[in-house]
Length: 385
Image 1: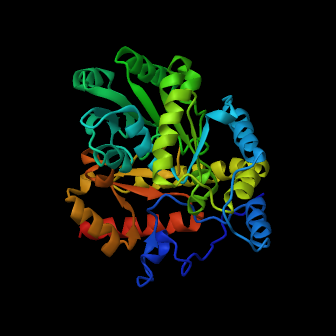
Image 2 (image 1 turned 30 degrees about the vertical axis):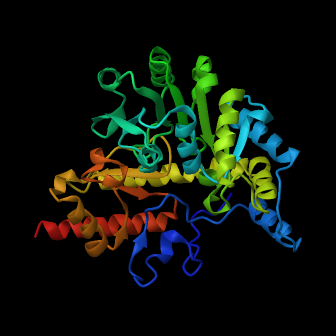
């Protein structure tokens, strides 16, 4: 059994989550999507072993690396891939940006479902493409896809669809039927699909890989995966982008090569191998712990009127509906930071549909979650006096 209750002091390590509040000792950061847990021993040991080599020059990925990725996807997701399909990038966000450039031309359109992870927008508009947003339907915190709305918004200039699966921030793990609906929509309108599946291992129900559900879309899909969320390795900067079609893959690799950012650092190979070959039990226990945190937080939030929250199906990110407080978004941010001393993500980071919401990170010891609930309860109580 792993001890996820252990508090680990991250202050002073130059971590973004905590050290941006270095001069605010009372602040409890529960915002950016990383975890406050120690790495499992095999990962730590892999770092130490590689560090003890004493030379950290240019590095390549081994055959064992690719096999570890292949085996992980088969074992954990029943998804069979080949080595040649895997393109290494230093992160999923850059892969989203390059994916958009690989399948569209300047001035063409990309459709997304909103609210959604903020960089989806930047990945599109920063390279001269246009964004079409189809709002998800919010039914008491449970979000569904509005396929009729998608049909109304698409134009002949729409060339790609960007999917977040599992969905950040609303916590949905899409069903087979929903994914088939997306696939049918893309085939009907001859769209490429860019799928961000970075949270695919952090789920409380079965996650379905898009191209397992829609194999007929495999040649037009860019599937983004990474060990970063799963094992809290964002600082390692390692992602595995799966592109089956050779022509599309070569176009993506050319764009990546033009930026000269496709090489792995000296620690990636050994650390990712350790994660994907020795840490299944850690992940299984982690998911149980996070789900219990989610259950507790959702129950408590729903007892603090007028706040509301739906208990997510995946990710470690809670999406809290604060619209009942009748605050502007700036006021809401100030309330949580100044009254509650809590750092959450503002809902507007995820688009206009996030107005009145905040995103809270539950990948932390239960004591932090309990303290957050206490502070929120006390903060809301002051508003009623």
